[in-house]
Amino acid sequence: ITFEEIGSDVIGRHLRTAALGGNVPYSRSETSELLSRRRQVLGSARLSYCDPVHFVAGDGVWLFDQSGQRYLDAYNNVQIVGHGNADVAAAIAGQARTLTTNTRYLHEAVVSLSERLLATMPAEFDRVLLVNSGSEANDIAWRLATALTNREGAIVTEHAYHGITEATTRLSPEDWPAEDQPTHVEAVPPPVDQSNHHGRTADSAELITEALNSLETRDTELAAFLFDPLFTSTGILPPDTEQLRQMVDRVHEAGGLVIADEVQAGFGRTGSNMWGFQAADIVPDIVTMGKPMGNGHPVAAVVTRSNIVSALRDDPGIFSTYGGNPVSSVAALAVLNIIEENQLLEHADAVGKYLQTGLAQLSAEYDLIGEIRRSGLMIGVELVQDTEPWTPATTAATDIVNRLRQHRILIGSTGKHGNILKIRPPLVFKQSHADRLLDALDTVLGSFDDTA
Ligand code: PLP
Image (tube, rainbow, N blue to C red; front, side, top):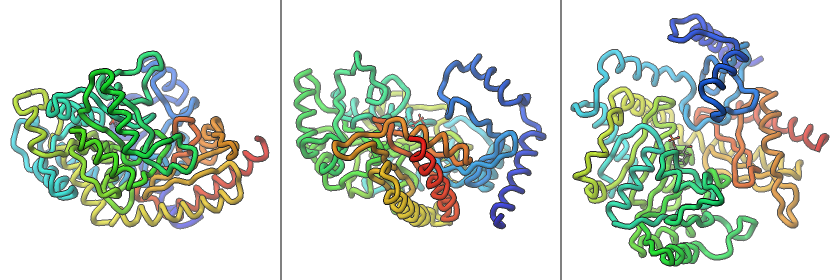
């Protein structure tokens, strides 16, 4: 046992005691009882694992379940500066005790946060709209684009996900029912290397032209191209930057706006840059963000230019009671401070590289591993049954995720074939944590080979 393990256990025990013995406004139940109560009131709402883990406390990269077991969290794009971060908690508690207001009042935190966000962006950006979730941010971005262009067509990328509102669901091919695909939206393959199996037959500018033509057959003109710069739900596909630039140019030529959805890729997830779009050296018209912005406290934003916001100037609809409230704003300011003070972008990139090297070593040993895709500390490990012809291993990813859970390590799976292991730890993940993950993955892949 290393010092780090003892330290983390001690802190975890302390946190558990606080959670179980403290003054919490709910009664405490055993896991099985809580699960059945949850089913009664929440129905079959999504849970990780059919036999879910019942966490009671978190500390840094660790989560603690009700029986005191500690799990390494390598699947978290929200608590990026660590579970239970003391600085974020202090900022939230301090502000909650001092003042919680409606956003119609003047408050320092909301202005400071907006200035700080703009300082991370290209000079063209001068407006921030603070909201409460990534879905809301994308919904408003879409409203801005349609209002400004007076058009209704969208281009998105295959299997993308952008939110739960009516408009964003229709912009999310991942959620399209086969029999009811929206007619104002075209989905194109992401701009990635064409030399493999990603299903691209033309270059990116051509794909946009084809999508524009297809919209035209339905009397629809392009309002916006909406994309996640990491193409996360398509399978974590860091883009071919030249191809992405060509797509953006083609969209602009056609009079459409470019919306970068940074809900997954933003806040240093891609390592060397704060925002995913920066790697491709493009300037979107609208950027949306959320998830890790408040390290778990709900806060999200749309960042854009004043001429674009003016499309909705007379529209009272963009007032949001909680968007930019002081508590959310100080949480986001604390996260920005922690990223900067601890140089988390550089750290995330270094640990991401280290993990990638370890995964490449595993791939030499296990044929199941295909491409390893990485951007900063977001890694997709493709699982393949065969390479000639390319055949995805569609059930292996879920199986491996479940087996890793037995080792008390949390990762996820994604992709349109469900064959991508998704490794997305908090940005404070260290090399020692990466070693633990790689060792467990080695063991699981070994056992998988034996039973496959
Ligand atoms: N955009 C992307 C790329 C996402 O991954 C998500 C959530 O998973 C959203 C938007 C929606 O964000 P939220 O769940 O905060 O509404």
